[in-house]
Length: 364
Image (cartoon, rainbow, N blue to C red; front, side):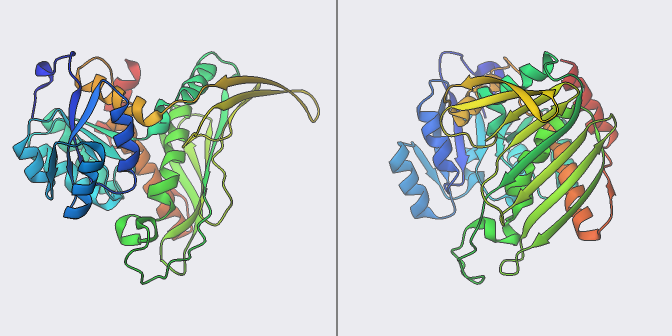
């Protein structure tokens, strides 16, 4: 692997991608559109898929084993575009092989213990692991951040994050070719595909450590995956996080931050196609609101995410989110899932090392 100091600013960051499935076809065009990043190697256990991917995107090197890829090539970083249940093992193996910059698709892991293991392994290796939450890099989210930082709606009272996409569940339960999201053993279901965005947004905009989670949910009778998760996150400070995620509901991707003097609303927050409007609304009299609209031009958050990752590799900026933030999200999500299963509130115990790292990162 190439050390940070050796990465010349004049050339793009050389990345290898692991997994040539659906999400990889978002990353590849984004990289092609950027002068800062080049995906020079691809890997998939399905040889024909990897070969087709390389031919489609002009990738120089093709592998069937990611361990061979990172051993053979001098890469600046690795992009993991694989199933959530594979992330922990793959991150740890990459770290063991000397990889020091890893961009890992959401969700970071599928459990509390795995998230802490990844965090401590990355700390021990002085490595950077970034969860690929591309929505964080869209200008619309940055406008929301700026509005809140400016005190536009006063003190935050609640953050409501919703990610619903209807799944008709047409594939048979024993169909091996059905989407990974319909396989519980691959990390499918709403927690690690949809709700992870919502939890990250609640934690990010509240800005305090989560304390306790309370949730209800349901499982698909056909697939055994969690297909509905509705929860509350209590924080050390006053605000509340409200998470709504379902594959039994029509499309709803709204992010709504409510404060003492108004609301900031982003109607489609997670995967924005085209231009979008951020709205600030304030009550003027009972039942009537004044609205201020901010038009945001179309942007590719996948390209912006890759360029931020390249900047992190060059040592120019901090990752977004930081690994400590992603671990807190994983702990929060784990608590929500446990609460729904147990029918009781679950404490979110953020370990001292993660809390300290998060505080140091927030202070920068």
